[in-house]
Image (cartoon, rainbow, N blue to C red; front, side, top):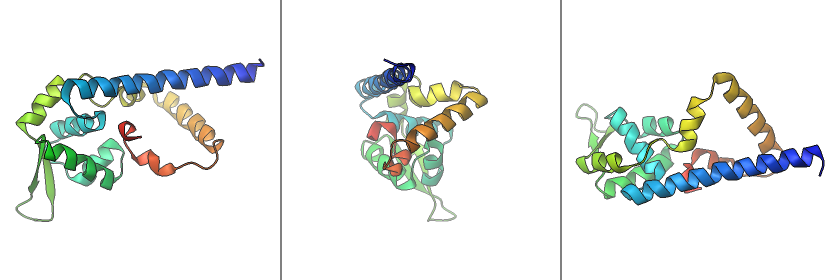
Length: 157
């Protein structure tokens, strides 16, 4: 096996480690509190910034607004969040955790943002820049792919 093949195999092994760890964390979240990792991340964002709008939450989670809305529908039906209309402008909907949502967050394993998001946040700026450049190059070599997946939570892929 030449050095390029060995390096490619090692990179693939590392991706497997990352994907496996992410999957295990999502499973632990669901087992602990009965909601997905993306839902816990959304709820954690609402605990940190009560009264967020759907568009603000979508931006905080780096997902599409319609994806955020669908995510919120599920946790609202479970009684974990509530939506309130702004009295000054009835078109504005603000989001808040309920007491049940707070309890679910207390049961969730850390980090509430997910292990990959948390780990990326720990990297230095120059390391993130290199990683982003290298991943963009890798994606370019993959040919036809669905770039819309970039705006979905990992737990929904």
